[in-house]
Length: 488
Image (cartoon, rainbow, N blue to C red; front, side, top):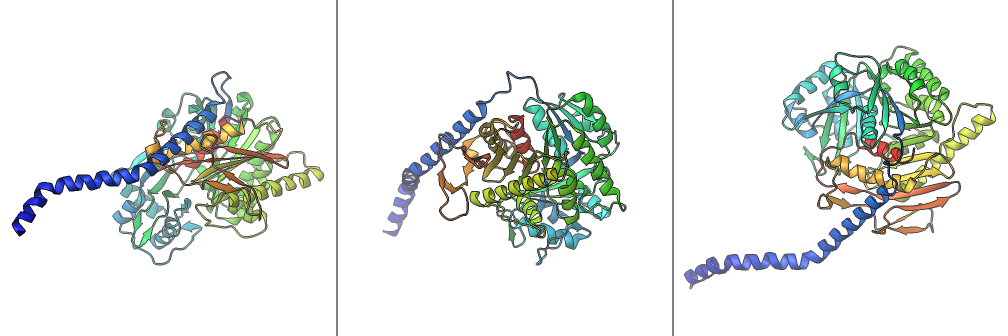
């Protein structure tokens, strides 16, 4: 009987297995089909919203973008740390800058576990060069044009703009830029290198596991902190006559060992450049990972008062707000915040900065500008606040475009594949954390939700989060740039 049982199983086992698989698919498919249909509907609606405003029937907008740039060396972060034998740490710690292997391990662990983006200056040139050399022959490594300004310039050129880019680059670097980008700056033989340690969601480093895909960036720049293209950029700006001026890359000055008074002098020159531009030219400042409180104070004094528009991520928003309210910098915040939390923080930033503008003008300062646009990009959603009646147009379409660009960049493809995406934004969201606040459902056929409050409009769009990550670095720059293009 035993032998007969075995023969029966050998004979009918495969059929039983097939039946079980088909049964599983039968019970599973309606839910998955529903999810697939929902993703398709959201994607189609976002694409329709993006196409509502075309660039084909208008002259190419002119955008000036500064400052700096680098060559990104992109590697799998865990593979690199394992290759150099970096000892695991039991003490995840925040460090303003990195001087040795222990601090590198502690800093990486601090941001890796929650999956928060971070960028740190490495004072130790020897260690930095060792990391770069180890990365050169690491399987899967990639070289790319990097730096906030070149990345934003590249996206804007792709989206139909003519761009003036302020930065000091090598001839090889300039050769790979779009034909629609004109460079203003010095020629350097050796460009600065930024080491991009990427990691996917669920990556493991010892007993640490990342909650989401992100990157940890290390740099040890020689050129970028000095904004050495600013003078040439300012000269070409007069003839270029831009519709929009974008400033980014200032985090390269964070914790850099300047001589006394050097950084303040650079910021003073930048403030003069921004304030001397025509009031009709929009000025956008792209925030970044700042950890030094004194440089944040400099930004609040020299840069932000001259910007009509600000762009930032979910880490940089509470960081800025904390400083505006007189508290210390918040180095690490929730990497997956709720919509209501972000909107409340955005309202506060908008209110405080515009109150500062009113106070400054009341005291006779005619060079400052009100904040009329605020764009926050998170993993799950895009959110914009735009003052009604301001120069910024097409907010709904711009929010949709920003959302789509998030997927396109991270997945590394202009064609969005719903099978490689998921929605992680809630089915409905509260517009504020205040009790009794309105809840807005996510409608597949109209996924961008817009409404009016006080003197501004708010728009929120879900992101089709890429599940097969190609690259997270440069995500914010691409997203911000794409959102701006439709609003010029």
